Image (cartoon, rainbow over all chains, first blue to last red; front, side, top):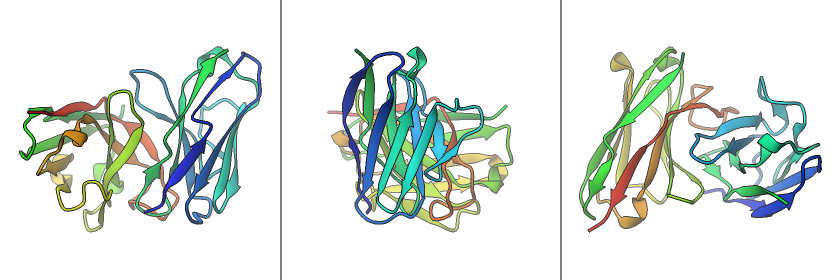
Length: 106
Length: 124
């Protein structure tokens, strides 16, 4: 199975900061990489699919990049509603999630 | 409005079985692959199992392979997860989830709708 490793596991940031989260796959997954946001007590919500495509309705401050094994999620200017946990997920084969990155208020 | 409603969770002893169900509405069920994803309290997401639109292709996480069985009844707009030989580490919220595509993986799919989840607690 493909292992997904996110870094960092958590980070503290301020409103307005640029935030980058990394995700590495244990083998090449082309661009079959999705990013989800989850807030406490809520189901996850997809932000980015196919590594860099923005889901409809998601603010343009979210962007994704990468292919093969290394991927990034960037929030260009962190907003109060963005404090949450973020997960990468590969859909190349037997889907798997990263362990999550918790974005907290500094 | 798309709705996915899980049921069947509860408290069960280690080694016993449980069957989860997911009733869906608001979309053409047999046009999409479906998944079960779980989340232990305070922990991250773990994909458990997926099934293609027609039920022909199924896949499982290594952690549940040989113990869990996913199935679907397109006539009843329902998804199921039969869980046997349950272990304490299977304790989690189990979410029913809809894919945007027809296959479990390999075609650029992702999950666009999730249920609210049902809690499975495995404890003696």
